[in-house]
Amino acid sequence: MADLDSILRETFGFSGFRSVQRDVIDRVMAGAHSLAVMPTGAGKSLCYQIPALARPGTGLVISPLIALMHDQVRAAEAAGIKAATLTSADADWAATQDRFRAGDLDLLYVAPERASGDGFQAMLEATPLSLIAIDEAHCVSEWGHDFRPDYRLLRPMLDRFADVPRIALTATADRHTREDILAHLGIPDEGLIVAGFDRPNIRYIVQPRAGLPKQIKALTDEQPGAGIVYTTSRAAAEKLSAQIAATGRSARAYHAGLPAEERAANQAAFVASEDMVMCATIAFGMGIDKPDVRFVAHAGIPKSIEAYYQETGRAGRDGDPAEAHLFWGAEDFSRARRRIEEEVEPERRAGERTRLNALGGLVETATCRRAILLRHFGESPPERCGNCDNCLDPPKAVDATETARKFLSAVYRTGQRYGMGHVGDVLMGNTTERIEKLGHDRLSVFGIVDADEAPMIRPVSRALQTREALVQTDHGGLALGPAARAILKGEEEVALVLPPAKPARRRRNATP
Ligand code: ADP
Ligand code: ZN
Image 1 (cartoon, rainbow, N blue to C red):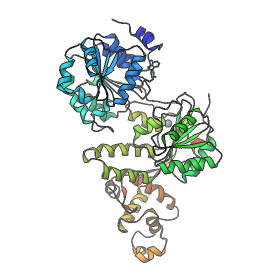
Image 2 (image 1 turned 180 degrees about the horizontal axis):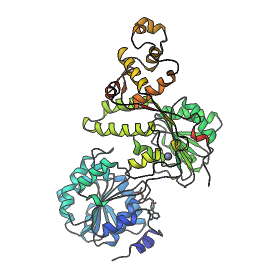
Image 3 (image 1 turned 45 degrees about the horizontal axis):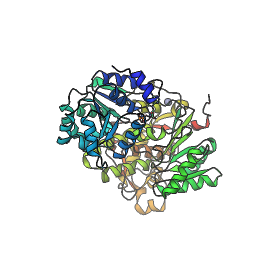
Image 4 (image 1 turned 120 degrees about the vertical axis):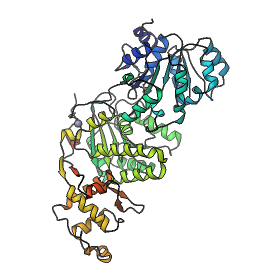
């Protein structure tokens, strides 16, 4: 048997295996089926490339994107590996098929719909297969964020070659998605191998939005290094970059609406800079090689915990201290919920709701943020990390159940159509013109919140929206949501996290 270490050294020029690479490769070499869950950049490709070289036969790689396959083949060929693709974009089909039949390929990349075709499977019988790799394996799960029905058609093909070791790979898979992958691709539970997701040098800080430009300015004043601020719209990216530039700090914008040359120029300037703030939509970041990004900030909630991990992961890749800031608002959650109900296919809504609730749990928690993140990726981290806002400045958790019930009652009694301001005025007994006109001063909920309790109204309204006890109406008012009933009936408590007076960021990030 070929020596794995010498392949690693001689073909790839690396001196040692990283994280779980060796565990995954050993399983493939032994002919077993596996699922490798490894963060982006952890080196997933090597996990199938090396066994494909070490075992007799050709390795079949299933990949969802043609562009990705061509990149992989170029990289493999550069290392002296014999690789090819059979895609709709290739003109040299006959030649590639001949090479495959002659056993002259180490790796053959195809799309899932190709792999499941009868004619293609018949061709596969011609040469022994060393392994079948299924890249981006989360695509097989309807629960995942990127379901592709073609992945569901792979199983008969996999079973036709039941003796060939299969290796599924993904960077993003929560527990549910993982179970789906194992079940749909016929991989035993013990085949699951998860690499460490922790990024210990990243400090996680999450705060409610309260005057975003001021919050961003405080952050950039404090942080001299290069950073990325993710905004939720193109217009916001441009506005914010202008605001930051006006303070004298170098700043640029990046989004898909800019001309290609301007995008490329801004990206190049950012990569070369040591202090630039890039204000960008999530179009920015993929494939950008800048190890010394010192902070990543989100001006609104990301799409999911996976997206948050991926986007914040662009900070501190050099291993030096870095920060991840998330500024969130209740309306982010309301908007996301509305999007799910209006734009997502019905059968995928449950998954999307659960993903959003998991994100709500992350922003609302009084406990360690890192522990929540890592648990999400299936790890068993310590209770406290010592490098997130909640570990550094433990927030006070107060019981806000009573205030929450008062707020929900007031929303109900005013007809489920007014916003936080009006409902708060009713509760505090403010006789505004509107309240008098509507007769809301005659409601039983009028004036039931005293001055001591009043500061809780805004955070309570926010907390009720993140947990879907309140939802936003089309006109921006508040209505009761599905989680309201349990709170009103006294079956569920509402604990509220009061942010510390002094944000954790103000404490200097320890430099080694
Ligand atoms: P992933 O697919 O998990 O995002 P890749 O397979 O693209 O990651 O690998 C990321 C980078 O790490 C590549 O440049 C690869 O060459 C490099 N790499 C992978 N394994 C090792 C290793 N054992 N030692 C050094 N570099 C490695
Ligand atoms: Zn922590």
